[in-house]
Length: 428
Image (cartoon, rainbow, N blue to C red; front, top):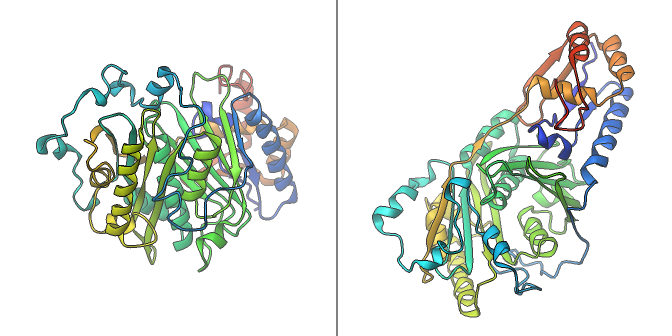
């Protein structure tokens, strides 16, 4: 029997259906591939609609040094240093339960966390996944660090990944949780690395509460460099929230093909965020022994003295790590995200903001599968059922397989109401 599968069953969340690509594919049927292209075209039209779009076509100003953008800052000076206090507060935003107002920001306190206070952030030998963020006392530098080894190993088992895809997905996941840190719980950040290499793309999605999912296009490729596996192409960013009328879309060229430096270049050029970003993994066989990274952001209130101190501290961190895949050696040696932040903010009176334990969580359901099915013309659905006698779809985020027979599909179509492309009208 020919089996039609569903590539990237989107369906990450109800509102996010408009921001990700859904496609039906088949290894045996040309008509299945054509259906996939039609659905992608329909959804891509929705994705690019709206004005919230950032594009970066400028040539990278970074050198080819592996430390550039990781241990040094991209975009030192913001083009507009007169950012309003409301935007400043937005940058310092944490989860709704821990939101910090400008009057109550950490800069109003000059005391470093005590040993008793820091105990809650400790993560001995990085035994659990953790995202930790902190800010300098003067409010000039924010640092977020993470370890996601357990989650990457779970995804490795889920997707049956070989070492290179493990490294690629691990870096993408680390970048997504770092950039999404501080967003509202319901807000979603999607990173898509759309390269022309044999990896055939990477997708990582993270919410403000630390719920993560992701996949690679080709989970089983042989030994090669990460750069060769990723190839050249474009980096796509989507940010969304249930209350937003349209998602924010950004795009930039893939220049380095190592994921973290490309994400850092995107943040600097497209979002004008002066930052240093590093994310990497340490893979032995089919076991990820370490995965994580850090994001250092220069905020509008940062002065030259603070900036100089942070750059010195980053140089110290590079020496402590001693490798070219920052910060995996530190993570392998048991240095926790809290301690990485301490190194980077040494001498700047570090003030903790929050910690989150990220989890791999897929939101696919049979209802979301049917919603994607409704985006196809009914005649094409009937054609699939006539040839295959069922609809079979596999979620690319978690691997779960869904099957629906002709009677079930007919019953669901009879009950369906509203426009499946509009979140507030759908009723499946």
